[in-house]
Image (cartoon, rainbow, N blue to C red):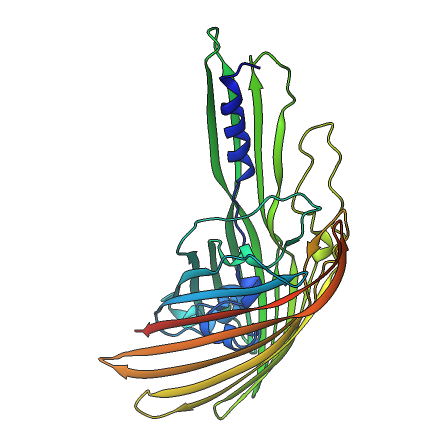
Length: 406
């Protein structure tokens, strides 16, 4: 290898190792100010743009156009072996849009469209590539710094039945890095990367009778993959093709079942979400054809119980005040950390709260929402290469939004 070529190859490897990819943050918190404040419930009662994630069938409840703009921030306090574990805070904007479709006849007030965007303020996509033996929180920190896009449509059918369908979208990374030298020994590198879209379906149904509502939602696995191929040519030494590849983030396929009771300003919802974490392939793949495969993550499927409550006071002039709260328990899918596979994760107890204020002016309804989640990571022990390792911590998710219905 020529001396001039070495810096170029080092640069190519560095750029590839810093690859970024994205995933959906909704799996951590839920989506929409009301549903985040009510512990990620909503499969049975969602009735605004947030239904694109909770249950697209709920979009059919929309009777007026609505636009929501919001801002969220997330802070982490993680620790490992008694020392703080570095995790960057995240912030993002939220945009939600609900559009009833003005059909006539039998479809009048029965079909509506919803859009939802979650856009980080400081990055577009983010993920980390570390050796499996390096202690790392594989589920939490980077998921709050990823772009998420969802769209859905809901249809109201007879007999209190509603159905809906939608899609979640994100981008994976693919590219090539070519390092070569000409006849004079001068080296050059060419880097070609691009984001490629990947999708997952969201399907849902709701049924209501009197004060009771029941809902079920299926969400497909949403996978952010990356693949960067690094090849060296004419450098005076034979090098294999390096493939920097794997999964930066992963939202498992899941099914959510839920029942809600609504009466005289009260909404109470109880549900459970089953997540297929056993299909998680792990964050990295083999670097070359002769490299050993990384250890299997051996994640397990999980069940997440949820409960959310809202009390709403409304007056004849369109003014309202609502207070919200909830709790959910998110068991970890990851086995205890080992020397070969130092993937850190903890069971999480999550407490949620929110406040909503609304008023009518000029024929439109304006709403301001505050919402929050506090995640407490139950302490857990593992054993990595350096010895026993205890880890835990907390995270705080806060947000506010303004909506106009017209």
